[in-house]
Length: 368
Image (cartoon, rainbow, N blue to C red; front, side, top):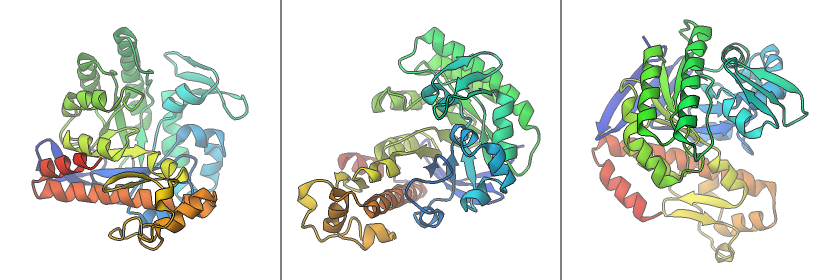
């Protein structure tokens, strides 16, 4: 029996709308999780993140274990108290950052040995250590198994090797996690762009048994069309009664296409990263506030959004802030982007409930 009830309230084709019930509150799905890398969603307070519509955020194990250290976070009362966020938190395992950021890494059956990108100190991250950091020290509500995500493009043999190691690490993660009723553990499907490997990975995950299932190894350079081709079959290989989480995705059009293919949860740095560089997302596609066309535009970014950043400031003022490199511009554009992403999730839930997701998808694609 899964730790957290997952109630599917409506379906439309492969798409589902529902909610994941956690002890810290319900998460309406499809759901977008803002990225709180080092215990903060960049440029925003916890109150602003909540006001944007977020019900859950993601934090990075790798960054927090190095600074300020997971042990210090635990001494200070756990991650929720440390960062002032009362809602659910999902933590990644640290594996992806070890592969992509650490100066030196050595992968073995035992785990990963790496050198910190901050100070060169050496660390070992095993499935058991990752679970201890996430569940016991940080106190995450949703914990991810340690996995190996290969770079793209990957040879089939290399992708197979990584998925089988990830499956063995998944079983060890499950054993280390044990039986808990206030925390959930998600497994991660791997297999790159190879359908047979995705099928094998899903089978191994289901055999081990997890509270939820993630689709990993995408958004690593394969492109939108290739990602969609994988999602055409990958999400359907996972249990229909558990949440499906597509890791590291993505642009609004990516979210719409993935929801249409049966995905329930997402995370990405894009809304805040784009906001810090002057780019906003709107119902009519992306806009760059650096452009001179906005210098005299008195209209707000989106008066229909229930967000002060979207409603209360003119594009001309925001253009001025961006061009002047004022910090307030980064705050307001990041806040708006998160509000837009969460509003999009609400629109997708409504479209699924009304059985009109195909029309919504078609209209949305036409404006991107």
